[in-house]
Amino acid sequence: MDDLIREMIAPERRSDLDRGRRSRLVATALTVALAAVGVTSLVTGALFSDTEPVSASDFLTGTVDIVADHSTDQKLESLNMAPGDVAYGVVPVSNGGSLELRYAVEVTGTNPELQDADLAGKLQLDVYADVTSCDATGAVLAKRIGGLLGGALTAATTIVGNPAIGWQTGDRVLAARASENLCVSVGLPLDTDNTFQNTDAQLALRFLAEQTVNN
Ligand SMILES: [Ca+2]
Image (cartoon, rainbow, N blue to C red; front, side):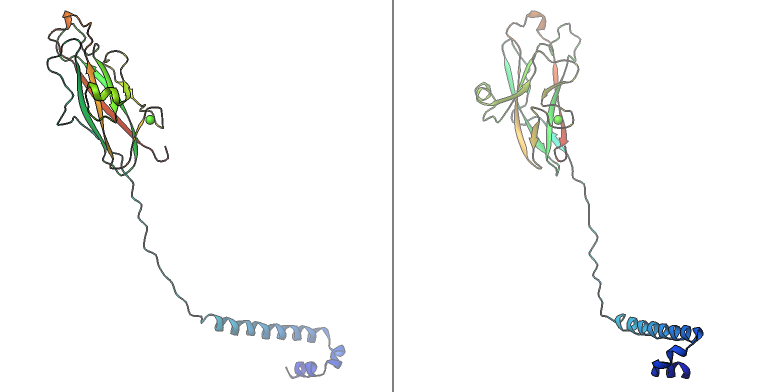
């Protein structure tokens, strides 16, 4: 070590150093440099620090929940129809879910009694929205949103919108918790003959809803 110090103090004698001394000099310089790095690391490792956790995030799914029923004030039915009669009934529809929905409506007709006449297939059905009064006068002023072209079939027939996934013409949109009243009319044509006397038919409405978001 003394030799090295003398060599560093008297650089003019460097030309006399042999290859081994040069190597020792480089190794010593490297050792000093590494020691300096270690001291620096000890100093920077003592910084103030802090951490702050954020509470876990919740992910809840929404609901699609359509509710439809007969109005208690104006139920859709007629218990003594004659040819030419039209019965009007209110069907309140509401979105009981937390997501906006769009819906379509199907109708299925049945003749529950043993009878030859297909009364279900004779009944005419129309659906109106935005009614002020669900009757002949109100129907004229209201917006017709669907119905049957002929009588009701025993197979489900779409009468409002389209239950297929996605937006189709006629689909009805209801915001979350919103509701609307549909007015449904069922008529027995004036040309209905005697074979339909004392017969029975039932029409069942079915509401099919889907989410509108991302769809
Ligand atoms: Ca649809």
